[in-house]
Length: 478
Image (cartoon, rainbow, N blue to C red):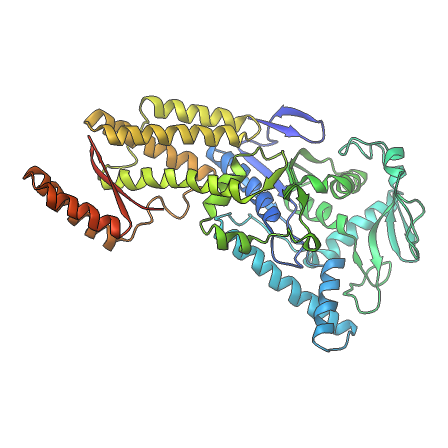
C-alpha cells in the first residue's frame, strides 16, 4: 500500500512501526456549530482509511481529538448569553462554553452515526488534558529554550526550530510575509505562536505556572497524540487547510520536545460550493442536515465523495448528487433482484470475474486510496451482476453469488451498504411475490389479459417488472 506523504511530497510505501498494528491520529472538530459537508468529507476519508487498513488485516488504534475550548466557542457562548439577556461574568461564560461544546459535539456524533462513520478508539477532549499534559509539554519547551514567557502568556520561538516550514514547503522568510504582531501581543517575532494564553475577563481558564489562562490551539494535538499513541506514531491526518499553521506548529512543538512525532502525513482536499469556499455570508454554507433533506440516504453523499480522489478539491453540485443517487440505485436494484431469486450469499471463494474485480479494487485502494478507480470497479461489477441475473441458468446464478459477495465486502470497506443491501418491507415483498406467482400461472395458461392486469396493478403501486430468462424481476419506480 502506498500513501502520499505531505511531509515528503511523494508517494511512499506504507510501513507501520509495529505491524500489524497501525497508530493514527486525526484532527477532529472544533465544536461551536453544526457540522457542514466539508466536515463530513474529512471524517469519511479517514474512516475509509481505517476501514481499508482493517480490511488489509491491520489492527488500527485511531485517535480523533475534540477542540472544546477555543475563541470561536467563547464567541458563540457570548452571543448566546447576549441573546438571552444574561450577564457575561466569568462563571456564566465558562458554563455556557461547556454547554455550547457539549451540544455541538452531540450534533457531530449524531451526524457521523447517520453516515455509519465509526467512533474512534479514543476521543480526547482538549479541556480534559490541559493539566498536566499540555502544561508539562509547555514546561519542557521552556526548559529547551524554544519558548519564552511574555506578559500575555507563553510563546513558541519559531526561528529556534530547525526545519520549520518543511511540511508546508515554505521557508521561514517566505512565511514571514504577511505575519504580524497584533496589538497587545507580547511575542518577539511575528511568526511566533501562543502555547499559553493569559486569562482574560469572562474566559474559561486553568491554573498554571504562568498564571491563570488557557492553552493555545496547536499545543493540544501535540500533547494528546503523543499521550495516546507514543512519541512516534504512524499516521497524522486532517484537512489540507490544517497543513499551515496547525500541523506545522504541531511538528515544531513535538520535535523541539524530543518527540519524533508522526511518520506519514495525510491530508484531504477542500470542499467548495459553486466554486467557492463555504460561507454563510455567500449563502453557500451547506450543513449535513440540509443535504440529507434533499438526498436522504447517506450513501448518495458517500458515492459523490468517492468519485473524487481524497487529495483533490471537490465542488458540491446537485447534478453530481443526482448522478450519485442513480449510481446507488443500480446497486440497490441488483441487491433486490438478487434476493428475489433466493440466491444464497456468502458463497465462499469468488468465481471468475468477481475475483478479478476484488483484485482490481485492492490495487486501486493500495494506490493512495484511489477511490474513483475503486468505485468504478464496483460500478462495472454491478453491471455484470445485472447481466448474470437476467441470463438465467445455474452457472450464471453461481457467478451472481460471487458478484454479491465481492460487492458487499468491498462496498462495506468504503462504508457503503451499512444500512443493509435490501431495504424493502417484508410485507411488500410477500404481496408482490404472491402477485407474481399468479401472473406466472396466468402466462403459462396463456391468459395474457390477466397477466397484463397484474402488471398494470403493480405499476399503479409503483412496482416495475422486468421479464428475463432468469425469471421476473421487480423494482420500485423512481
